[in-house]
Structure formats: structure tokens, C-alpha cells
Length: 362
Image 1: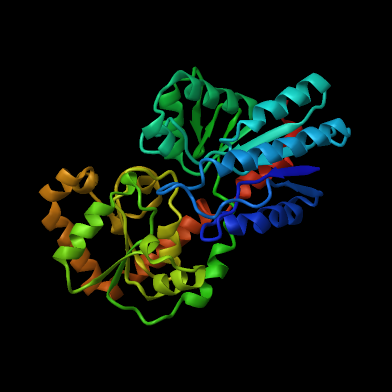
Image 2 (image 1 turned 90 degrees about the vertical axis):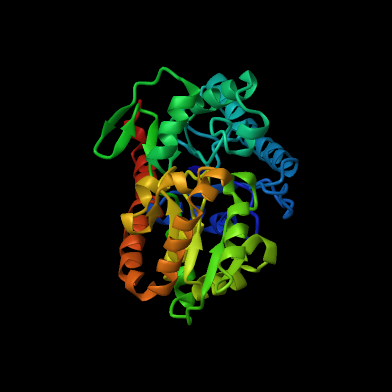
């Protein structure tokens, strides 16, 4: 049996698709029964600038823990079962391990890491920082997981370096390996089909900011560019309260997606844009450095801060004008970019094989 301890779904985010896609994918690829452990309904209003609701997420996780405990009480969890947390930052995994070990049930546990206090630009990093309780909690959760899944090498390196854990990590064949880490794409195989109806739309002189409006995304840079380039339409998507269909239509009509992000361990919106032939303009830092081809990376120094942006503003403007005015010349490179992202970062074959081969792990 595979138990999916899921992440609460927000209708406008990928977590909505994961509600059905992840269990269906696991069932199809592994041919094992799959049970989803959900916390029920969740507040759709996230904490401003955040990925989820800080209060609601704990209500959700508490309901998940209750179900997990009831499964153990009923004797339904068996040796060889696998628990997959679609968000590894879930303290219930410690209580799951507590029950499994004290009751002598030999399970395996995997978790997908998205962010944490170890990222200084994440909410946890900014508001809590390096307080011992949160750093020790993250180390403990890491140790509980038999398989720690990360979507980018950048994320693994940051996690490893900040938490200062004495892990012996070996880089081999494009993968980190300490026996517990797996670099795998996320389960987002559906995205190409989801965006397919929005390809071929008439392109307009639109530049999108598809990120959360949060300090680590530097929206002030985008707003300043808007004032300096009135010939183009700049759209900050989160300000528009768009439905999924409206958002995808806007992506399909846009020529460019812009990022000056200071936090990114994967980056979904720029892949969505590339799928519908929107040029991604991204800084050469964070996960972008390994994921983006050279055509679409600009020097990190251009937007490392607002002051740095002001020093390099003309260079940023020149690059935007080049992309917008010579859009057709960049379309072949967008196709190349999509192939790289689709194969390496938005398909979870390594995750699937790790779960399938779990009996080979001690």
C-alpha cells in the first residue's frame, strides 16, 4: 500500500492538480493500491505573499495525523507500506515514525522538499531564521525520511550547506547521493497537456510577472520597469485575481515572463510560460542557473537588489527590448528550453523508480 500524505490544495496553484494527479500517477506506474490522507477542506485565502495559510495548514496537518493514528490503531499499516509526503515540511512525519518504530511496523517514508528556514528568502527563513527549534526540526524531519526528494541540485546544495549536517554527499552521474537524497523532477507531467489549448494564441506585447507578490520576488523591479517601458503591457498576475483559464490565456498571449526572484528552488510559472512560447527572462542564480539555457539567463548582478537593479537598469531594459522586438528569433530556443525542463525537472520518473525499488533499501 502507498499512502499519500498530501499538501492542501489552493485552486489557483499546482496543488489543486496534485490532488488527483499524484495518486493516479502512482497507481498507474506502480500498480499498487494508493490511499490519500487528506486534511479536508482548506482556506483558499493564503497568508498574504505566502504559499498557504499559516493557520489553516496546521489544522489540515492535524487532521492528517488523526487519520494516520487511526490506521495504526486499526492495524491497517503493514510492513512494506510506503508513505509519500508531497510536502516534506510536515511535522506529522515525526509522529508517524514514532508509531511505526514503537509498533514494529517496517515502513518506508519519502518527502518532497519545497522550502524551509534554511532558505533565507523563504517565509520561515525571513520570519524565524536560524532559531534552534526550527533548524533542529528540519534536521529531524530529514532523518525520518528514508527518501528526501529535491527538484534541483541548487536546492540540495542550499539545504546541505545551511543545515551543516555531517552528511557525506557524493555527486555521481548528475545525482547527489548520501543514501537519503534523490534529485528528481516533480510530478507535473500533466502540464504540457494542460497548456496545449493555449498554444498558438496571437502574441501581444505583454510581459508577465507570474510570481507571488512577496519580497523575495522583488515586484518593485517589475513595477519600475513598467514605468520605463510604456510601449509594453506589464501584468502582475496575482493582482488580477485570475481564474486558471484566464491566467493560461494571458500566458498564451504574452511574449515574455520576467523574473528577478531571490528565492527559487524550481520555478513553475516560467515553465508554464515556455510551454506556450513565452520567452523566460530569468537571472543566472538559484535553480535558474542549472535549468535555464544561456539564451534566457541574464547576469545575476543586474537584479540582486533594487539598488543593483538601478545600477544595471539600462542593461535590463535593453535585454527586454531585444526579446520583445525580436520575439520570433527566440522561438526555436524556447522549444529547446521546454525539452530540457520537461525531461529533467517536470517529470518524476526518478521518484517513481525510488518508490518501486524500496525493497532494495536497508
